Length: 375
Image 1 (cartoon, rainbow, N blue to C red):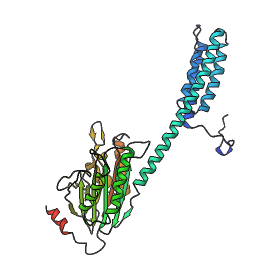
Image 2: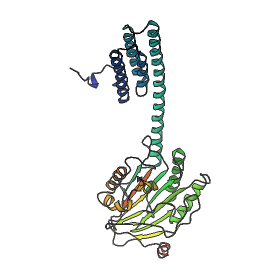
Image 3: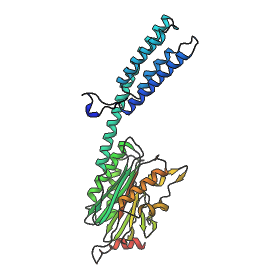
Image 4: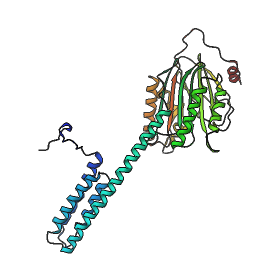
């Protein structure tokens, strides 16, 4: 009968084998058993004993160096037992045993190097995650009068790091939201994303006009990037039930209204931040229950077998019900299922809902916004 020792009863200083160590140990022992069976079953004088030297290397690919040494001891004992069975001459026996011992030492060294590399990668991944969290602060569930949720989907399982950015803040000029995508990936992209967000968190409280915010952000980007670097961005402002959107080379947000999905295309295209964009606002009067989805191009580029994810077709069914956080969770589930768990690019998502006016009289629409809407 086999007994499983409870964790609390294990001797001090001993830890259970990790999943990788168990896999490596199982594979190595399986190889040793196979060599033993073949050695005893084969009536010829062919010597299979040397194959046991592969067992420590097999263990080293998954297990710790301690497990590798244990496998090496077992392999050495097995090699000696098989060799002294009478079918192998003394010189071959010595060579085989020396070979197994050397293989064990080399495999143990390999396991030590592999473990150190894995620890370093884990530390870097943790630092990357901390950096990402420092850049992207939690959003929602309530910003001003709006229900807001933000979510970041990383295409890399090892580290949630990239150049996608978003922020939602309640300012004297209404709730303002930004979503953007830095060209490139890695720490340089995170650095530039942090610069954009840092500037935005300051100027969003100071500038009454979204176009002035765009100009400030463009100068911040231009001072910190090369000639071929840029940041696409969309800025949204909700003030008294009026939605204003400016777009700098970014995918158009989607307005969800009464079962319809309406792309909020800008009145005129504008280049990304870093290329001196001149934007024209798009103005929309919101209705109670309206939702707006902001996203980066990773969503539009997600595809399976060459077929792109049908964002517009599925948006209302996935995002139009439950809370805004529930909507983003449904969208992520459907997206990951569509691409079979393999994304080519990171994705940032922000979903906001307008509950309706809290007063009988909504704030007036600024004159420049009316002119932009008419134009």
